[in-house]
Image (cartoon, rainbow, N blue to C red; front, side):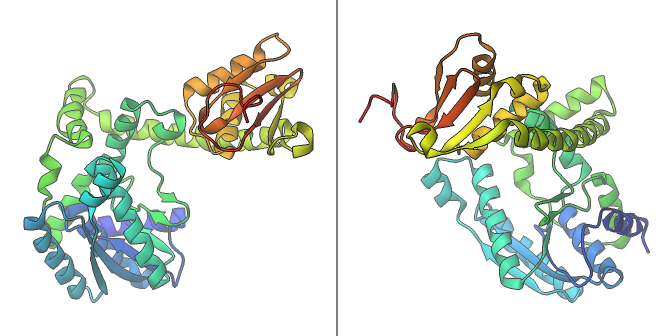
Length: 346
């Protein structure tokens, strides 16, 4: 057995990424990472008792290349005696409809396609070929975009007990060596060299510059992500425990308005600042409003202020009202995009 196959088997067993007799959809683009994943999982499928299905998604962005990619994926799946599904999604249509970037739209449609194929096949897991290099890039991207601790913890090896990334701790160089050793063909995606995409600029421009200051920057970023991920798990547990102590459902009888949430200010202020932020973030999520650092800080300031009353106005008609020892989160007129004092409007 090749060293990469042995290492991957150990990772899968240690992290319980797959269970015996599961059907696994393997997302294969034709690039080196996903082709290596297909071959490694194929080699391990008997030992792990897995049933594999290969899925290739054509995004319709590179018609001159995708026909060759699809053929390569089909031929490799046939060689390994693995069923193969090929499908196409319309990225340009979603870009026009939702005003999204091509990169974002492609990701949404790709994951949606994979999920639908998994449901059709009764597949428990979807295997993705993200590598340790991808993890380093992702952490930098999220830092640039202003992510908090959750975002900076990077991608998870298993997400939602559905998406699995066995190579997340494996450098891309190891995969390229494996392909060379096994003489396995693959194709390079030309769009990976287009600097119109932020991810490509991070990989092609920013990381090489950072390596001048720290030659091991990719390893450092991955280590940071692991540390933050562990701390994220701890803080998430503490925040959930705090939630049950300081947050209660708000009945309609309490306000005469649609139900919402009540925050006990005295108990809330006894929490550590980090847990306070998380509890407020959880409240925004529960109330269906996008959160941000600014919104959270506004709520914290209102809770700490000595004044007996006060009100905050948020999107979709959400109001936060301070009444002595509690903050009330609710929608005076339902979820409507209105400004001003909604208690006086009709």
